[in-house]
Image 1 (cartoon, helix red, strand yellow):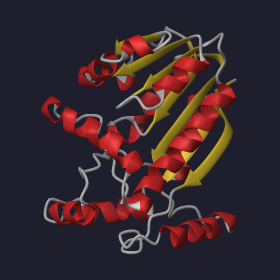
Image 2 (image 1 turned 180 degrees about the vertical axis):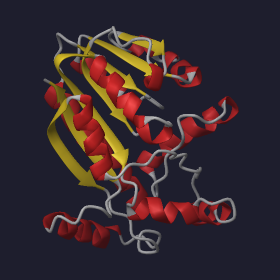
Image 3 (image 1 turned 45 degrees about the vertical axis):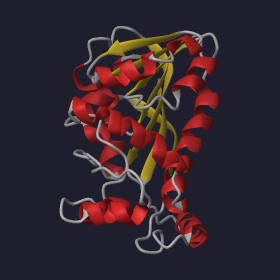
Length: 258
């Protein structure tokens, strides 16, 4: 099972969460690894497609910072913004390896930096962790220059993985889940999951134009734990082909401020 941490856990848990975020992309379980790697691959392609070495980029909620190196290389100046300073402190340890990276503390729901305009914004796996996704998306719009791009990903509310996680990551079951995976496992911390229709409505009401959208990431309980990921991949292809995408975990968007 693919597992991600909350952006708003207590500071004492942060080192554990940072380690978890590094683990999930190289999991020994094929499905867990694929679910995160497929999202990573999709986001990376969009960073390369929409970045400009003469422009500015920002990532809200960078977590362990897996995208920052690519944003830094592809844009003139890059910002990493998070409400939790411990994430930024972790990134700061290696800041000398970046071309032109700046770290800012800010709350995406009540942003104080909306007047600092950007050309590209990455917001991946963030809005499900906050209480007001609508306010966050409105602030993303306000933070963009005209013609600017947002790369946005978030889980689907009724995806199979999210539904199964309510059981597998419950306080009673989570220790069993950890024993099965033999890897770091934490509760997801998803407090504001959205359906595709709900998110699309917020996006349009905020003023964005949708340039691209995609759903990806199928999880099938037991089959995933037994390691039969190739079978799951084929089922995902079939579901996508017939446009049955609600079971897929992640909804991905490229948005433009017209």
